[in-house]
Amino acid sequence: MALSRALRHRPEVVICIAPSLLSGPLAWLAARAARARRWLHVQDFEADAALSTGLVGPGPLARLLRGLEAWVLRRADRISTIGPAMASRLHNKGVPAERIVEVRNWATAPEPEARGDYRREWGLGERTVALYSGSLGRKQGASLLLEAAERLRGREDLVLVICGEGPELSELQARAAGLSNVRIRPLQPASRLMELLETADIHLLPQVDAAADLVLPSKLTNMLASGRPVIATAACGTGLFDEIEDCGIAVAPGDAAALADAITRLADDPALAAKLGKAAAARADQRWSRDAILLEFEGELLRLGADPKAGRR
Image (tube, helix red, strand yellow):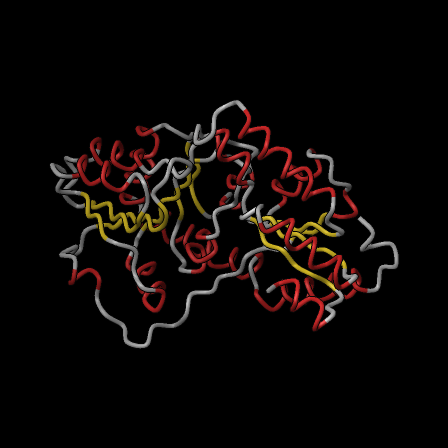
């Protein structure tokens, strides 16, 4: 299908988005058939993530993943990714700096058609809500949220809300069974995303240390746009740490005590939470403006299409 479309429409540029890396060879074939330039956009270093989090161990499969990644990277005329730290990782993998472009994700949450009341629906009352919404897998390190909740079980004015799906869900549900300060809910519909985010007083963004700079979580953009402070597990010097500096609090990955302390700090200091939330909204507007990102992307796309040296890999 992709090959027939490429031959029929003769595009100047074929764009491939990773993950999945498996789409790379097909995009390369389509570009070759159309004599087009090749653009690879990296949302997530999936091979690195699989290896660093233990999903794939050393052996033939690991070598296959590394080989496929190297093959795809070598044959792209332009490679974009979503943050400075990930761009540096591409360079460290041997991609020349002149072929690397930063194209950020932007906040995409639609305005809800009819605003409801999550606090009423879920019995949250006037408690301070610390929210995590997203995938529940190894690289998210969501189990840390339950460890923090256990440390905060004496604070009846606080509640941790986890909305998500993934391989860690059943374990989280079992651990949360005896905790009155935890609510676990399914992922909510996109039409209510901003409503959900605005229900929070604090956003939580856990990430295991092994996944640092393998992906800049796309959910961060909407968290910041909601005007709420973010607590992220991110080491100093990582991309995620830099993104929330001055508009959130970073704690060491895996440190449940530090996470609980950060939640307590923001809950007990509304002025600080408001200050960081205001800075978060400004950060989203400054770095994740859709119009500015698309204008820059359009310019780079036109430059690539006109580049006589491209399309030969």
